Amino acid sequence: MTSLEDPSGKAPAKTGDPIDLLLVTSDACHFCEAAQKLIAALSDEYPIRLRAVDILADEGHQIMRHN
Image (cartoon, rainbow, N blue to C red):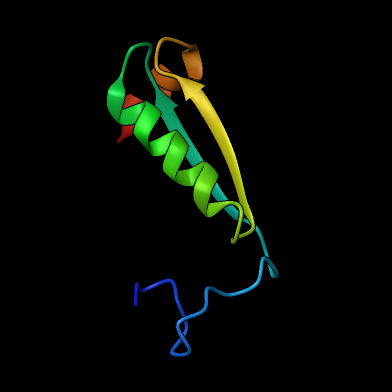
């Protein structure tokens, strides 16, 4: 059982408030690609809203400066 499953072994239904995720990405980043695939798979069962921001964009630069 993973931490996202309930004791019955079933994943919770895709209900409730959305989970907002921000992913800072970079071209040819295999970690970014893996993260996007994992988030896409999880979004089949969980209410996830993903926003991807390129690290080279102004917003991406700002996020990385502050984190």
